[in-house]
Length: 158
Ligand code: ADP
Image (cartoon, rainbow, N blue to C red; front, side):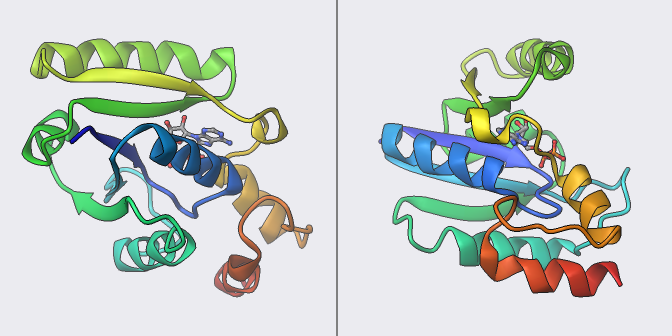
């Protein structure tokens, strides 16, 4: 069984993330979305809320599981029997950081591969932080996040 891990903070999950999850689920037998607790940033949604939200918007994809992890991602991946980490690339600016992370994860777990998937051109400008910024300023979030989340995000930003 080919298992891949798709990690992120998903605060909140956007249509860009969802696109990567849907495409990965067509390639792998199972995709584990790994929601990071992310102690450095103070998240808008708690870890429990982010897990619940990611579960609800991926419930139509049979081979997706949603989990959280603490500690090293590479070790979590091995524990999940995954051989692949999926990362979405939006722009050249994502590359340097992801390159460093991929090499570090390779050093920690040589049997783990990082695969980069190009974002959908519709979402190349999209990030969780820009969604929060636009929402905070009263902008329209349709098309950026799943419709079912729009009110919830707006309420949280109030
Ligand atoms: P963000 O960068 O939006 O705060 P995360 O830290 O949760 O989001 O990112 C998790 C993963 O999703 C990373 O691999 C990131 O490159 C990827 N990603 C984020 N936004 C998009 C997008 N719009 N299209 C494709 N991949 C994305």
